[in-house]
Amino acid sequence: MSPELISILVLVVVFVIATTRSVNMGALAFAAAFGVGGLVAGLDADGIFAGFPGDLFVVLVGVTYLFAIARANGTTDWLVHAAVRLVRGRVALIPWVMFALTGALTAIGAVSPAAVAIVAPIALSFAARYGISPLLMGAMVVHGAQAGGFSPISIYGSIVNGIVEREKLPGNELVLFLASLAANLVIAGVVFVVCGGLKLWAQGAVDERDVDAGNEGGSPAPAAGSRAAGAAPVPQKAAPRSAGLRTAPSPATTPSTETTNLTPSRTATLASLLALVVAVLVFDLDAGLTAITLAVLLSTLWPDDSRKATGQIAWPTVLLICGVLTYIGVLDEMGTITWAGEGVGNIGIPLLAAVLLCYIGALVSAFASSVGIMGALIPLAVPFLERGEIGAIGMVAALAVSATVVDVSPFSTNGALVLAAAPDVDRERFFRQLMVYGGIVVAVVPAAAWLVMVVPGWG
Image 1 (spheres, rainbow, N blue to C red):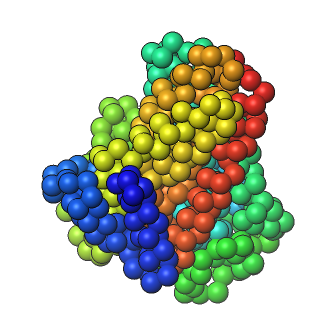
Image 2 (cartoon, rainbow, N blue to C red; image 1 turned 180 degrees about the vertical axis):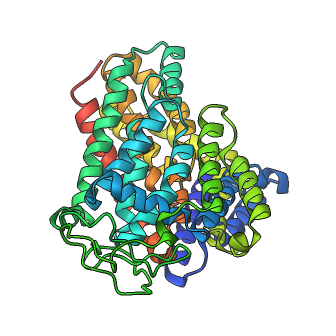
């Protein structure tokens, strides 16, 4: 049995044990990386740790730390209340607002994980307050980021278009952008319907002032009747009013100053969040290091608000993601990913090779860098693209869509950020939801992208 095949089988065993025995998959993956890397691939400790995602570790810790402080001092409650006012009480519009916001950020140049890191904590805090499925809100944020991710001025778009130019393949920047936008918009629409979005529309509008005054410290209670399918239980401290059509205000429904007023700590936290956006988008600073720095400043100024924040960092999620990605790094180091891609590229039937490359791109990208896998697979497709049997423009678009829509996987950077950012949820349950949803996307989207973009022979 070849080392590459052994490494893939060990990964399957890790999934099975983690699923059936409720062991943290990251811890299992670290052990597997040690065993396979040392015994099968002959790697030393430095070779094994070469795949450790240090940058992602810092992003997960930094962003969850900063937003734990924001939850503790009531800033996220204030933002949620402001969001309700922005859409005139139509809670069903909020997922689409978050979709559009992350899409706009990536379209103008933000790296996809940076946009998700900024928007996801706010979006999922809103979901917790109003009983919206965290899967729905998280998927809308991630798919929004990918919808704008291939604009001609975006990071993904610039990289893929550069690869196409370097390989001397026909390209079309607008088709690439619109293909990703359309695919993610369709997926978001399906998720919205399946995860209870229509029930949110049926509720009408909630009173903009109908914020439960009994909620404090980032533990919101959902409006009655607002729990969407698949939503995780949210602790309630007081019985809220019905989330029906707006009614005349009453003293019982007027939000307290605990929710609506800007205290000095909340003002500073909002300024920190704005500083995070500017630092990442304008000055291209690292999101994780910037978030940790801002969190430390807030903790120094308001230690009482921040005392418990470090305990709310998503440590189990950090262990899970870093362990799995370290093992994937071992697979990359020993050539397993290249081995699989080259095996597909040597198939003599171009259309079959094309769909298999899309599936490899989706599967590997669910655990690793989307840009990295596109950079590896597009050159592998060059030999049969040069023969003219398959349109290059459609093939590149299909690969781009297949390799990025799967970022809802909890093992990808975006999915991990969503998992870590969700407050007041059963994380194991939410993790399983994201994993199942990611599996469905991996199984369905590459075939659909191949059928729509490759088979017609675009380009």
